[in-house]
Image 1 (spheres, rainbow, N blue to C red):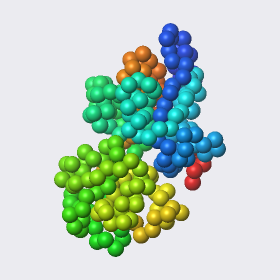
Image 2 (image 1 turned 30 degrees about the vertical axis):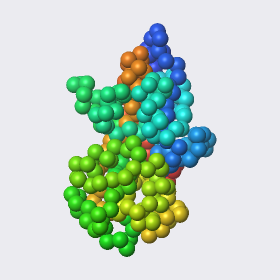
Image 3 (image 1 turned 45 degrees about the vertical axis):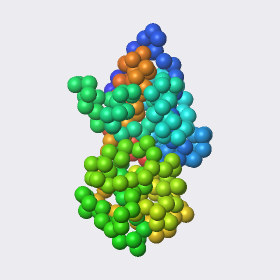
Amino acid sequence: MLRFCSAVVATLLFALPGRADTIHLVYEPVENPPRYYGTTAKVPKDRPGVTIEVFREAARRLNVSLDFERVPWNRGLFMVETGEVDGIFHASYHPERAEFGVYPTLADGKTPDESRAVFFQSYSFYARREAGVSFDGRRLRGTQGRAVAVTRGYSITSELKALGIPFEEERTQTLNLAKLDNGRVAAYAELDNMIAPYLADNGGPFTGIVMLRPAISVKAYYLLFSKSFHKNNTKLADAFWNEIRAINRSPLIGEIIGKYR
């Protein structure tokens, strides 16, 4: 029945005049396992990641093609803002991003619809094991006056400002980990999946770095469309978000994730 409904939706969408035939999406050239892999401009052929496979299945159901491009995060946001590309992932909700992009929303047109998020993931503090830094959910202790490292353009800066924790931004995870490793910062606030490949426990080059608990926050992450794409392809954009939800609620998502275990 679900396949039949998807086919009907795709047929109706395909018949609309002016509907886009290809959706141009950007994402970072860093790894976020199991969501996406690879550190170059190319999408890996054999194991691209869970999100890539979900998006390709959604596109197949809607009879639309996808064109992926990998660029640094801030560059990708700028490309969405200027309408150079149609969308970016994975974007957590931030009011500033909503000024130039469109999230899936509830009926009020303002509240992000978490049921149509791509997935959820956590931000945590990471510190040197011997540094004596701790986090109780409100205060970061043992910093000795040092700032926290964050990746430039990531939304965790809002939470750090609210907590009154000073931070320094760098372009990449590697640069931030090097600063942490050298003691130039007290801790590093990062997405758990993004930092995992760099840690020694997972075969990465950085040793002696541990995750602090509790997590800073758990957020929903979305496919953020540009305003120009959404304006010209509103039904297609909504249908794509709906297919993401349908896939995430179906047995297929388990099959996809299982490939990467």
